[in-house]
Length: 216
Image (cartoon, rainbow, N blue to C red):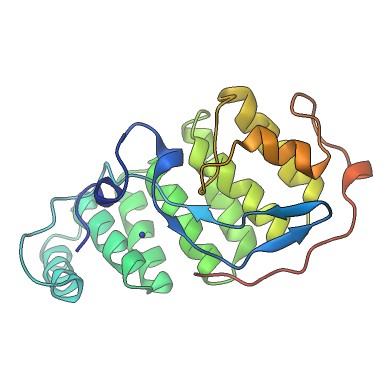
């Protein structure tokens, strides 16, 4: 989750549907009445620089490290470097690269969402939520950020009511929204005991789930 400028294109068709892209698989959490997936999603990489052909991802990391050293204002190269660190399970370095990219080109919702995924991998759950919130501020229709917000709230923060509210907003934007495994989010909400159309309240929170820990 060798990567290219849109590295999810190799695994999923339909670049304009971020909910269909590949996932970082995480430990599943149980709910009363069944299991709701903990898979968290990453975005298409529309802002990245073209990855050079040939070589493995680590050689690409070297190439892009050299590139940003020569031109530290190359925002697209910083995004690509962040993506490469993302895919080689180096979340701290990925966050650093994405941060540099956002300093140069603020407000990219895809970069913010992927940075949030990396914060979660580091166990930095509030920072992950903050990154997803910034992505939604930049693009209120960003489905992946809303899906991931619910995942972190439910499985890492123990906030079922908050997750229900996040996913209700997602269903309001796209009634056919699906999670990483292709399940309708509306069906997940029904399983969780939350109304598909109304905001959740603390009364439906039920037992809290244990945080499974960040990362894949």
